[in-house]
Image (cartoon, rainbow, N blue to C red; front, side):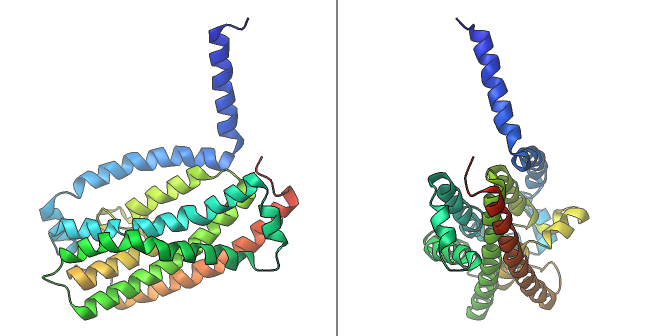
Length: 269
């Protein structure tokens, strides 16, 4: 009979082999833990109301954090929806039928993300409404429309990221740690919960490439009258540029990873 100690050793060894089998997932698991510790350090400084007012020009932290958190539903759709769909299709073998259909895989992914994004409005609207309620002293109809326009552009950009992440599933299969890393990076590096201006310059440079950064900043600027990260005109240009760049990258990534996935075989294991 095998001893309990040897069974424990075998169980640990099996878990280690499983963890390291998917190298991208393993690396991002480590990076996520490092980023989490740094994020908590930055997050603790954001509760200082006087620091918030000095940084963004408003001490209304409830509205600040609520408007940022309302982006979570859209972000989850971009990160998880299409990727989870492909993981399910790889596990069941349905992906073979999907890839035999005469349509663009890129538009298949974006279409599914768009459908889910429409439904996610159910979760987005109440939190957004709460945030707007706390900005009633500064809220105007024009500001609300401009803020929502910036939000919608961010959602379009997030859909492109969703297409990239979904295509990664086809190539690397197990990438949940990659999604977790980006999920937390989006929270900490875009100004979702912490004023963007408090981040060190190298992290701000990374944050400029993320679609939520300017979307949230413009929304807060128009409904809370906060000081923008940069000139408002430049923020709109940057947001549109990010949307176009991510659209191009998503189209190219989907085509490339679809081809390499076919070469490897469309199976989960």
